[in-house]
Image (cartoon, rainbow, N blue to C red):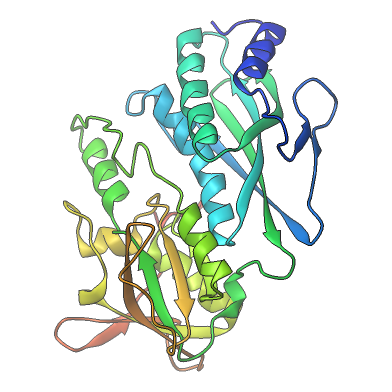
Length: 319
């Protein structure tokens, strides 16, 4: 079973020693963390719940992968706003019969990713629970007034994605089929990498007019941009970068790739790669009209059809 609460907290505290001069003034050990927000910056805050048998399964995902994935979700949200991560907070609900070695593995994956991006684990909570629950909060910084929102897309803007799509969905499909999948460190399903460097570049260069991370699937997340920007969109099937082993359907509708979807002015010249990651133009933003679907996809035969949202949605049969 897990260590007693105080012993586990002390273990986590040793893993998360803040570095001198960091924006974290006071971390684990007091009732609240104290963060230093530089003048001229705004604070970004995002929260995510990761629940056993909803977001991961112990039979499929090693503990290190679960910890890594739980933090990736929040870091990817910071990337989608063009921000830099500042600190993270972790509240854990753990079953009484859960082996401590599983908890150790989870913390190795979580803290390992935090260190990679210079993010301090600044606090949280621990409780017993019938199943594993990880409640993660991540804070970040962005220069005042520069956060990239979902609502900035304009008609005529081009639509772009980073990397390749469908890789995580392809692995998940294999797992549901009962296949054994080796959790390689390079896997976008088991160990996704948040695109923080790209998000920061797109914001600092004033390139992205809107942006979102691809956590729920292209069809769902592009619909969020269209809804917030009050626009419609057309994407081109043959331009969508499909990951090896995936299909167009998975690239359109599966989530958890944690790539970035963004828009930019038609006048903007983008490089083929940013931070070593492929950048693909996949469509165009259009004016919203009542008779036009929110998103259309232009197929290889030249015909256009409505692209309905079929990615992940909690409390929905459309999954």
